[in-house]
Image 1: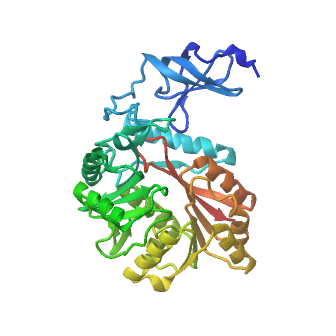
Image 2: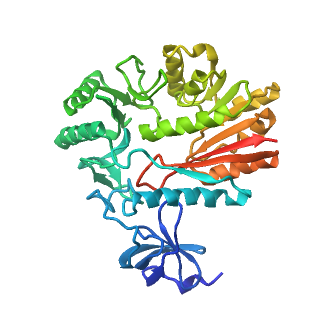
Image 3: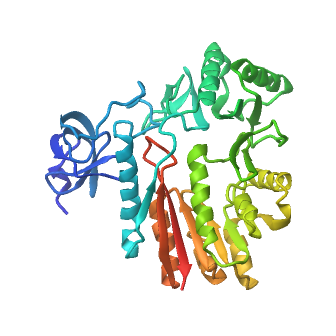
Length: 433
């Protein structure tokens, strides 16, 4: 390895950007051969950059000047772009974004061997797609953190947010600017189809009195919220009635709803594509029971049941579990679904110990992946596995365990749920030989 002194913090370099690295940074090599990441630079560009971090194996640099621009570079739509850390790719043409994200998935999985042909699936909406937004609350109101910082950049309007989200965001900005935001750490907006909800994350150092509860709910109503859910050492109970959530999926008589403070995919339109692809893959599995892990609020559970599968669904979060139970009853699918609220590794270990077998397993784990589940999943021996991942590197690690056990990769999609950001979703289908 070249000595670290060959590149130093503060040094200016002219760099040839070779590719767009996973996450959206431009990637180049410095004069000593080390990788240099340059946020804001695009593949094929020549840039002037200043080193701001130099490590043994890589360096990071601030973009100073674009000396030769890529033909795929476009003008960002948001005036806060570059200050707000919410988006990383607004300077790249959207079609090029989808190609880049497919390349990230391919690169992450390349060490697994021969991959199926990867299909890139764009978001139906390039702008206005985000129906769920989490915001920090700073001295100047709600906003997003600046990249690599705890500094809050105030946001009154976000071009990737749905119109209903922006209406509530504008109202919250107005009422919080009056000083009412003290002791509110964060806000989460969930909005769509004429309803908008705000979840407020409250600092525990102030007791949650009835008077403060009323003040917070009044504040939300003034901002335009349909209703408010408070998070004070945990989420308060929630009535999951017909007007207490937002419908995010409607297909073939099935309606799925999201509830404030609970996880759901923010891009409703792209999520419908994700469900469709997953059901297409599930349709190719042998008849028999499906096991769904990290089942959440029923995003895949109910479509699987609506397609005629019996489903054993495992979810650790109690609120998401309650929402899925509610939706199964509401949609008359409870008879096909057995729902367990349990830690996923423990549940799969127990199922494996009992000698259970499944025709199909679908899993959509959090970013860290499902490392602890894979040995038990191999023992459960599903005929087909559909692995949905928001972190392709974790997917590659976990899929390697299935390949060792004799599975083969049959289908692969890169689905863009997050236009203009450095995130992508991958769907890998594996079959047991």
